[in-house]
Image 1 (cartoon, chains in turn yellow, green):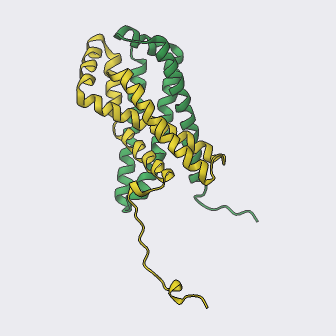
Image 2 (cartoon, helix red, strand yellow; image 1 turned 90 degrees about the vertical axis):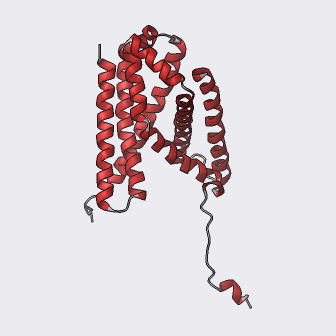
Length: 130
Length: 114
């Protein structure tokens, strides 16, 4: 006879902290967060592009602006947001055509997205901002 | 029997727009990285010259149009998920549209200003 206690309805508790998510879930929420971050700082980036292409004086002024440590940090964050969004997006395009949808490849490519975007951020950030 | 379901396929259109615009932006990113690495602009003249080429203006315009569409679908999804009161959601969606259309117009001005 089956154990009756197994059929008893028990309260469920899901730990929804992002840090508790499986890797594909982490990549997914970071894809959303990075997209929103890029949207919110779009106008500032356009302001930088505008100034940098307006005149030699404005170009120098923009160069001064983005050499400030805080601006560098924000730009580094934006660079990561862009690269993560791009890498995760490429992964989703493959998932759309049913490539890498099984559990093992889905986890492996999630890890790849996280690592590649962080490494690219470090390398490009170093080359561009320091 | 064929049935017309009112309001259907909006989701599919958004889905497709998001992916096509994503591919355009990914290709632009690659092209820009190559052009940037080739030109290695360090001063205003070189930076300006990079964006003065005809193909670069055209490609950058395509990028910004794609960005407008892509960010609209993405922000709309985010607002639909988290902002439940219809009035607030509509208001914020309008703000997003205005910001994006304004940004695209600004980008055109930046690219074609002499």
